[in-house]
Length: 59
Image 1 (cartoon, rainbow, N blue to C red):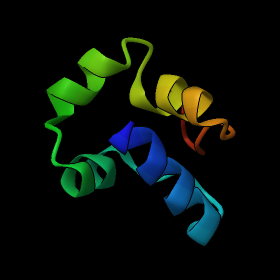
Image 2: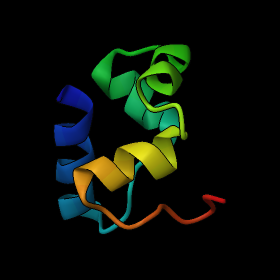
Image 3: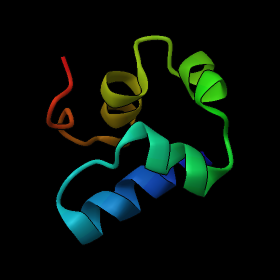
Image 4: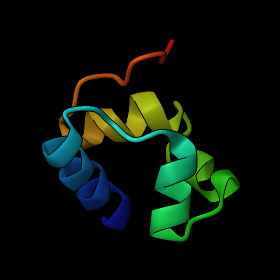
C-alpha cells in the first residue's frame, strides 16, 4: 500500500516513475523486500499495480 501510494504521488509530481533506490529510501523498504513484494520486478510489477506506465529504462 505504502509503495503503491508513493509511486502514484511521485508520478503525479514528476511525470515518471521513481528509480528503485528512491523507492527504497523513501518507503523504508530494503531493495530485497521490494523485490519480494513484486517478484516481476519493482519497475514492471509495482508500476503496473499502481496503474502507471513502465518506467524508462525498464526491460
